[in-house]
Amino acid sequence: MSIAYVTKKVVIYFNNARACGKDMKAIMVEVCCASGIVQSLVELAKVDDSWMRTIQTLASKDGPLHQANDILQELESKLKPQQGIRRITTTAVWPWQKEDAILMLKTMQRLNSVFSLALQSDHIQLSRLIREDVQVI
Image (cartoon, rainbow, N blue to C red; front, side):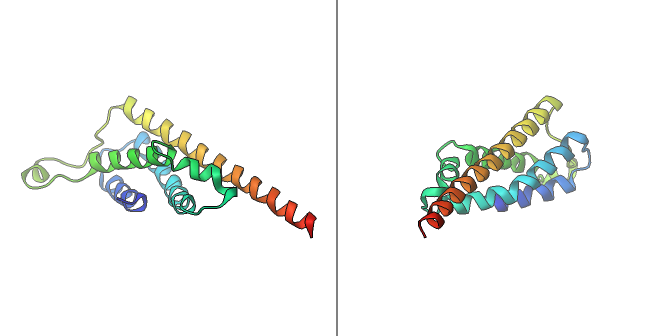
């Protein structure tokens, strides 16, 4: 399942949940911030350029991109509306304890920082390569 698809579902489920507090809103902000960056990084990781090694490392098995995807899939599975009789008897509520929500929020914030640093690192590498090429000319 693509990260963009899962992120879209998570945001829809967040918007439909009734018993949401500051924790849920903070996680939703982090998910929205991460979604665009993560999708871009997934696409960039597929490109085989020497200046993008840091980004490619993010996509390694059990790397930060996979961790972000795991968190998004966990969010989606817990926020997914119930089917059948359960749908009638339950409302969309926040399915985590406060400690779980705080841990998830901190993890998403950490991953967002890692993604930002990886992009900066690769941009610096690209700038160095461009500078070397310009000096040769």
